[in-house]
Image (spheres, rainbow, N blue to C red):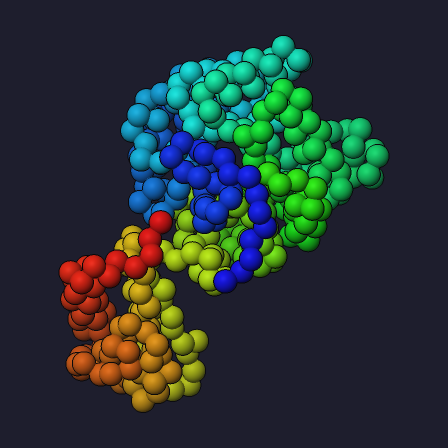
Length: 365
C-alpha cells in the first residue's frame, strides 16, 4: 500500500476527508442548479455511480434558493461553488449546504469575509479554497512571471491566511492547471508547506480520452507520492464518466476499488470474434454494479483462460464458439458468436447471485 501524507481531517456532511479516510471521489453537476428536478436527478445518478461528494455551481440567488430542495433529495453531501458574491455563500449555508468552494480574497472586504467564515464555523461547514491557473491575482502574476506553480501556491496561502486569522481551520485546498506538470509541481510545493486536506485534479483536461489520460498521469503521480485526499477527474463529457475514470485510477494504484474490473486482450491476428464490441458491451452492462470482482473478455479460446487465470469469471471466443471460465477452469461452452454476450451475461448474473448470497460484496465505498 502507498504511504499517504498526514493531513487534517475535515467533515463534508457525513463524509470524512483527509486524515485516515480513503481518497474521496467527487464530481460536479453540469445542469442548471435552478432546475431542482434536473439537478437532483443528476446528483442521484452520480451517487449511484459511486460519487461521494457533489459540487454545484451557484451563479445567482435563484440557484442558491434551489439548494435546500436539492439537498433534501440528495443521498450524498453537496458543495456550493461560489464566486465573488458573499451573499450567495450565506444563502447556501442557510439552505443546509455541506461545504463551500470559495476564494475568501475575492468575495469582498473584511466584513463580508467575517460573515461567511462565522456562518460556516457556526454550522461546521468546511471551506475549500480553489485556485487555478486562471484565477491567480495580478500582483502574483507580475511577481512570478505568470501563473506558475509558485504563484498558485502563494495565491492559495494568501487565501488560507484570511481564514486562519479568523481561527478557521476546516479547510481544503485545490491548485489546478490544465498543464499536468504545473499541477504536479504546485501540489508538491503546497504539500510541503501545509497539512490541510488537498483536493487534486487537472482542470480543463479535455474530452473523454485525452482528459482521462491527462488526469491519470497527473493524479497518478501525485497519489503515488501520497498527495491527495479527494479528487475530481474533469472531463468535457457526462460527469458520470468522471467517476469511472476516478475509480480506475485509484484501483490501478491499489488505493480503492469499486465495481468489477474488466480485463481484455488487445486483439491480434488470432482473434476470430468481434472482441472490441464484446468487451465494450460487457463493460457498459456492468457499469452500475458496485461489487468488486474481475471479469476477463479474451479473444483466444486456446490461451484466454490461462492468460486470465486470475479473473473471477471470463469468456474467451473463437470461430463460432466461446468458453466461459472461472479462475481459469472452463465451466461451459457457448455455440454461435451471436450468443456469446447474452449467454455470458447470464453466467455473470449467476456468479453475482452466488457472491451476494455468500456475503462477498467486496470492498465498496
